[in-house]
Image 1 (cartoon, rainbow, N blue to C red):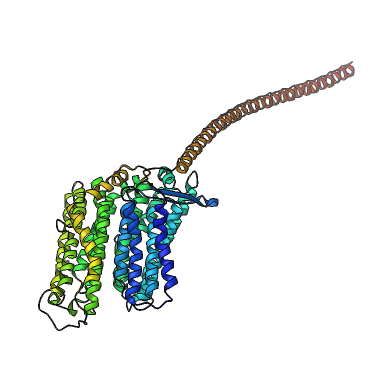
Image 2 (image 1 turned 30 degrees about the vertical axis):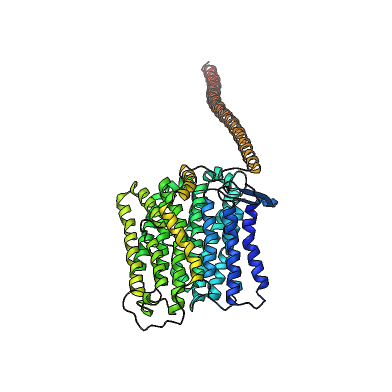
Length: 591
């Protein structure tokens, strides 16, 4: 396929944002502004359809920051294409939900910037580029929430910002740590996939990455920011948050978690599945207690996202295939629900259940449209969510039947709280409620709604094309293969060869170090033997000295004895002479 389509797909959102910003100074009607933004949002869809069937393996790779070996490396594979499609499909839905007279063109520009950042994120094959896109998607959402949010938007924006910044800081720390701990410092995801698991701190990096992705998805219990953020955000912002931002976290788990640390994903699968099941149940039960349908949809999204994470964490091909399909389906369904909620709120001026009742009699088309999206949300057979959730439950059943029952309860709860919304607001006795003079939905709304209905029914009735597209990705994730890219570039192959050569050199250095260690050990042994011999000789020397000292003492003692003997003999001789002299004198006197 012509690789020029990929940079064109990435560039169009940024071009659209720039164009919208430049013409914002001209006075235009609300209809013309929204129509222009809506038409611009259709361009990526046209490009995606133009390359249909040929996107897999499309890539571009240009040096960017050579000093740090950071490349502008983008590639499309069977994993990323489903998230790319969701991004370009949801953007016009979000634009159609924008209802503001305060800087609408800035609103549209931020949506396009978010779309561009997400497209880079879903195609990045350089971890540094992935991190930049990961940080970039935060800013448009933050400003949308802060500028056009509800009455408590500042507190909600602050809470959202704190959670996201904390997760982002951890993510960047893990990226830098991984970069400096590998044999060859690199940000290339395909090369990192070969060596990341063998780094000394692989478990720590895995935990940090998972925490960052869990905050943005969000995985229970990192969901505290979600309810108030979804509620305070404008409906277009809620669509972007629920349909796209959460998918960035899911994609990160698939691309980084399974791509770099497949063994650790399998090792901690039971623990992660447990958290996700608790999150799915918590979201469903919390949704049941709501008396405001915007909060209800927010908690419903939390439940369904954790349902998806159950399948993703199972490390089963069937479950992962269902999770990836359900990520796409959830994006379509949750965007549809927030869209009809926006149209309903515009007509009733409130999202509380008590603000309206029996409005099917006034807005029958809106009522029937909402019912279609509600049936999709509760996974009625023939709708899109049924297929994905069935595959996830099937994959879980092979591991644990009781957990399957627990997760299956969330589907029952989903039917209960969604039908409760329909019963409280659309059906029942018509009240004298505050309803502005706006007619039932018409052509403008159906232009957006009909494609969503078509996707819901087509995916539910005939999911085979998407499942076939996802099969290679799910297979590679579960088999732990390092690269999800179908066709590798020559530069990448050269880098892999360089890595192999470097590893061989390092093995040679290790052998040299081992030989040197053995020589050192030999020298140490010789030194020890020499010391032992020296000690033995010293002992012999000391023993000889002691023997010589003993002989010297014996000699001295003998000399002393001889001296004493000679002195006694001399004394005896003197005494004898004296005695002889006295005797001689006695004889003389006697004569």
